[in-house]
Image 1 (tube, rainbow, N blue to C red):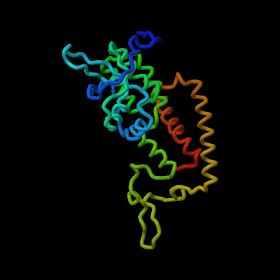
Image 2: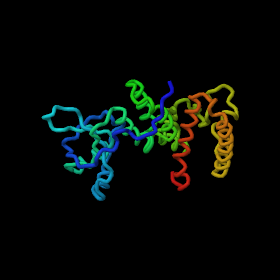
Image 3: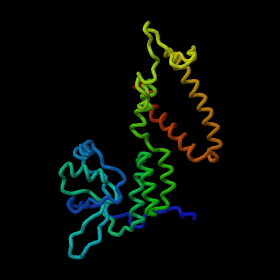
Image 4: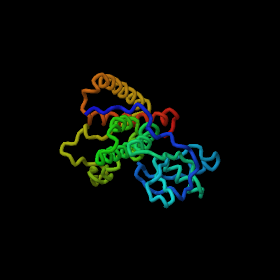
Length: 261
């Protein structure tokens, strides 16, 4: 079924901006896609500059004689920062009438269009939306956000370690499979026949390494140009793997440009 694209703002996304007591905001995490993490820097910014960007709230249903309680649609980190500062109120855009579909549209806008989640978080979000059959129109946005997703921290560290010449984390210890040393101190190759082809890695000068890397990257760029022309014909998993490797280079570029390791 072809979905009708959203071309207008949510019908009730123009709620009034007002101050709301923090005590009236619930801890409901329906629209939270990641842990709030360390908000100390954000709290310091709010402490110096004030709370400039309102959070998005909608009232939760309740009995007429009960105090109004609010559900967070977007702005969990700002709320956590305000609580760290022991503030008593939060600047919020209160959507007095906001259905679930429009609430998801607001919640997903920043995560998918503003500051993309990491690939693992996007995969989890995709599974969550599919399981709940919520916001089917967001599937294409998730795919686009995956292209822009930052590299996972552990993957970035492994890649940088690889460039620095460190052995992979799952590499065997030095004494595992190493050639045995005979009584005279010479290394004895356990493989039958030995030979120069088993002499181990060849050392390269910095100049040779630079030339070799430049040549290989030139060849990869040529292959990418060919792949671009036939991108839609490549298997989905293959495209995903190529994009994962391309993200490594994007993340590494400012480090190489600045001469940092």
